[in-house]
Image (cartoon, rainbow, N blue to C red; front, side):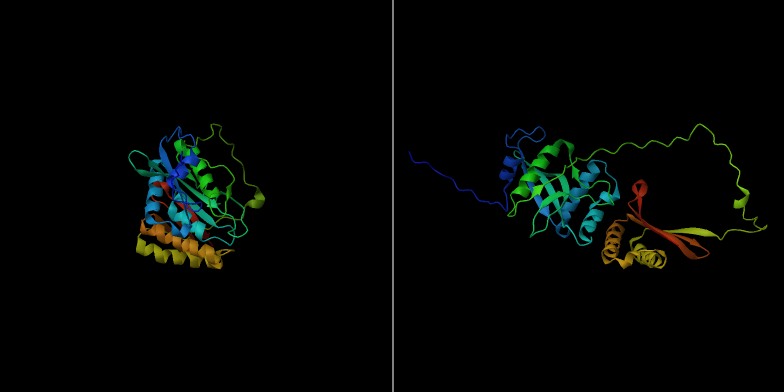
Length: 292
């Protein structure tokens, strides 16, 4: 009997969806995605296209993650404009239903990659600015982890993934801060701390807050903020080229969406403090501050 062979296309550097599935779920009986084919797309931060960003942001909305520091308009520039060191790649985990052919994004995992020549291990990238950056659906966590490890191991220079990948968790509902029921006893001010009594009619200089959210106005406001920071900060932002580029790029991206607010506190017409807020509404967070 003559044994027949079939030829399939593919290789180690570019695994097919079937290969991804077979390695991510060898039994084909994944509890969350039985019959799903997995594709892991590795991208440099500056090579992530608009379609991937849109799917990434849709995942954030589905899981009620409103933290602007986990938005791709913040994390991608942060991964790109960083001091010299380990490079960052973004892994997109796509699952395709075998019956309908529909493909959906199930996970986004930024990775700190090893040196391209010396090699080493990859691990989930955890920037200091964001509490968490990996975004993986809870039901697909095991399948995404297996597919990602298989994809890295199949590269031309195999890479081992170390560290755990945590799925996204629904943010806990905030509770109001309750005041203490025990009233504090009044504490007298020591005599040595009494500096004097202000004369009658003395008034503090009038202060006002100037806030800008229009895309055309915030661009100039950010430059005013950087100039004020350079004049007052011990370590100015513009003294670090990567930090200055990060602030300008992130401000431009959020400003286009109307999700950037620049605030200045002025006294007697002079700026004494400034803040860059990322996000809109209740999800807004202070991102950069400067004060005299």
